[in-house]
Image (tube, rainbow, N blue to C red; front, side):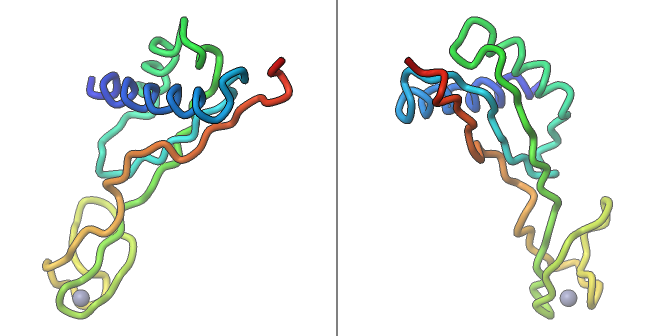
Length: 119
Ligand SMILES: [Zn+2]
């Protein structure tokens, strides 16, 4: 389950960011952008997040996954658009010489922090 190692690094980044932005505040939500090509199973990522955040300052916070669909650009005609399903070819000229421009993302999009709770 590669979601565990993905989650470990996301959580590490989130906690470091929390410490930098608001050391006394509580983490409410972590928003993560995940490209469709990353083959991340959302349920597994949620499960890993819950397990790994327990006992840290992120405990009790929610993980929100923003799925990013696959998009490509055609090297032959310049078309750019979403790729549906598993067939990777140009949506205009059907050429196979396409370049993936979206869908490989995996990053921390934003944090929701409870500033009011800080004392
Ligand atoms: Zn094309």
